[in-house]
Length: 133
Image (cartoon, rainbow, N blue to C red; front, side, top):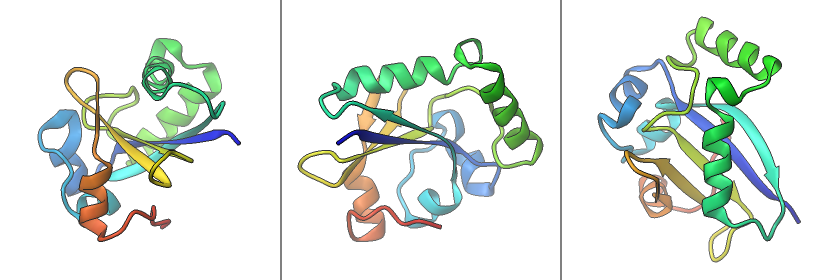
């Protein structure tokens, strides 16, 4: 089974503008629901090391690492007002599913490296299931 990574950028909402570039870390259900919009998904081998997987995602989500269709996608999200930036930045999150011991893990792009905020998100919602909009 493959690992599934969902990439979320801070949104153009009130919450997203507070969360962008790490101004504030997500803490509440409202932060997670209204502060982020999904921008991409990627699949990885189940034995992929999560640290390497996250670093690959970060590099791939930089403007110079994107192919032309991804750049167009990111620009259209920005033009539609869904996101306020087009390259992965501090404050964005990646949700990796099919992780042990939880069904998913939430990673926060921090000032240096990645921080596992799965427990913060679970506490905000009261459970570990990722809620679909």
